[in-house]
Image (cartoon, rainbow, N blue to C red):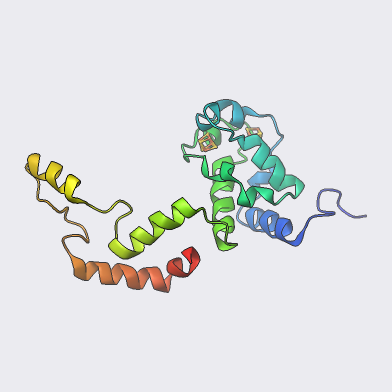
Length: 170
Ligand code: SF4
Ligand code: SF4
């Protein structure tokens, strides 16, 4: 007899469900109690509803991959701690993000930050204003990171290529 939960899933939804469950079956413990949504600090200020996202994965919807909601989570882990069933909603959220990016649903703002990281080694590169603040605090203008060690930037860029990160962001 066909499984009513599996039946009718699209290939993408099946992949999402299968990939998340393959990394741990905690998702299947979700009883849709809503404790996660009730305790989510982001959900108090945005339309993020983590219980709803869990439901969508369980029921085989795939629209969450292109949803802004997916990126409103701050990964604070409050829902993870409060979930009475150890369904690990924060982990599900992070896996959904990985799948979304792999399927080309990266948000333009994230692409921009990721490109900055590839080009400069910093998500927020040091500019003249920050340099001045650092100097006024008695610090060197540049932090002891790739900004001060350009040879390490090359190594970082090799790693970003080898791991496929640059390909991912397009
Ligand atoms: Fe309840 Fe946990 Fe499911 Fe959220 S993830 S609805 S807290 S069982
Ligand atoms: Fe909300 Fe994300 Fe924090 Fe969970 S980890 S409570 S979904 S912000």
